[in-house]
Image 1 (cartoon, helix red, strand yellow):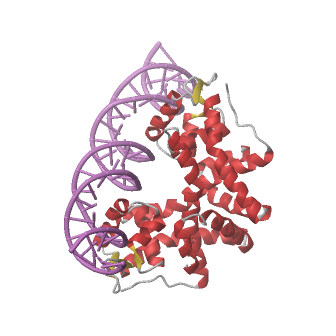
Image 2 (spheres, each protein chain N blue to C red; image 1 turned 135 degrees about the vertical axis):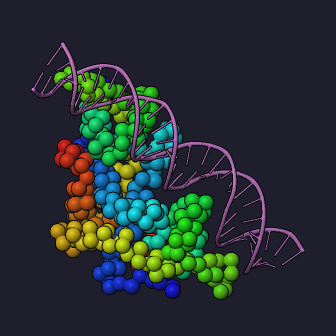
Image 3 (cartoon, rainbow over the protein chains, first blue to last red; image 1 turned 90 degrees about the horizontal axis):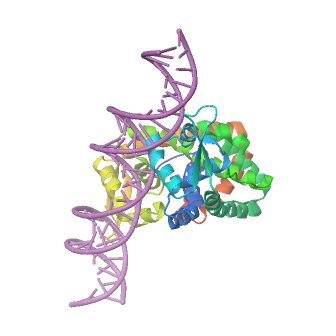
Length: 157
Length: 157
DNA sequence: AGGAATAGGTCAATCATATTGACGTATTCC
DNA sequence: GGAATACGTCAATATGATTGACCTATTCCT
């Protein structure tokens, strides 16, 4: 009855980190989500634009591996981005089964609008806490990311 | 044609952080999600258990504010957790309109199972990068979290 | 040449996540 | 005694993602 989580100070510090992850992730996506809504797209579309924008020439399969969704889940948003003229495809000259994905000018501009607010949020925090803290934060996030299949592309970012 | 995101080195470093946030969040939730599935619950239920477990006596309205969802969105998962015997409610003695939420023994045990894997993942990274890095990471995450209404509860964690 | 494998696209069914809007009950505030 | 608050729930809708099945085009392999 009336259970509370009992734990050492060290464990409490870890609990706080779990909560922080939840809150921080929401804060980081809040503004781009609102912007996306104005363009009638969602967070998935944002992700597609981001990875195609930063890894131009990505194949559909590579994008699936990065996002870790099924091709059925990618199909609709990818098609919508093509219809909106944000993304174009080009058959790979060496293997015409493979479609290479690229951003159009307008796709590039939309990505920039979405990314801008996140960059500003990051920069504001960097200005506040200093470069050393951000470098440590990045190192820790890399440790989390390392088990994701898409992390192998991070070096070229 | 063939747009790529052009940017300075500093901007590239920021782009990488955006991708890292996405990958890290997925890694952090992957294992608890798999465990939750075995108990026929989802990530929302995990969140409810977490915040009720760490802030026992929370009212429904307070929980809504922390999770930042509508009461309709909370209703079903909260009811399911009651039905499963994970959560119990007690009317506030001073204002009987208010229901105070608590974990039962079995709710507490389930939360512990879900939390354990995240603690272990965190601890493994702490062991690898060192306390200083984690403290810096935490400081940065607090800066992100500060704009969330639920962050005011973090001190008591 | 011909079959197997691969890359991609799409349809259907299903499930979970969350929203807005409306409505009802119990309680408390004034 | 009426207004406001806390909570619960029904309905409709939209979004996100899954599994499973089936299709075309291309390439690989023997």
